[in-house]
Image (cartoon, rainbow, N blue to C red; front, top):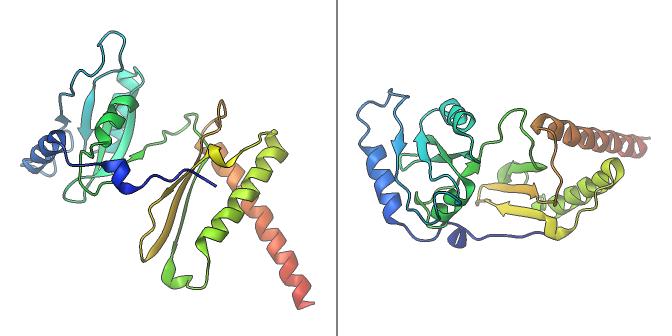
Length: 222
């Protein structure tokens, strides 16, 4: 139903850039200095005039990263990740530059996530998670497939948008203790006004499912 990318293919091997960033972060003397920024010179893999912005900045505060994106623009985006000390950090870079380096994994064992800015247009996305010990009898994969089918039906019903399996990106980050999938709808030329609209769409679906469940439960009780 979806495209899956293994962790090995996604992060690759450790690079010199990773070593440089880790060394810089580990040299922080004042952990409370929230304004300090790690600046890393990225290689000029594309022409400066025609290529993407080569800005590469790491912040300790999410708002600082967002402010940097808004001030500099030029297609820059903000990403969240955990550093070598498992502390949350925030990166500002052009997505093409980011992907070039993230393919080489600038931090080991690191998952990186795009920050969806408030009131910004975004794709339909969901984080599906539950603790396995509290849901031992549940078939997560089957439930996820059912949920995707329901969402696809509602996309047709409300917006006339037809979605195929190839339009859905499924990032599996499940562990032995937790079922975790990040679903992103990669439908061409389709975006929601902002994440609040996405939330309302998903809430509408969940409300309908809850009502249907209550009706079925009442039927069996009667």
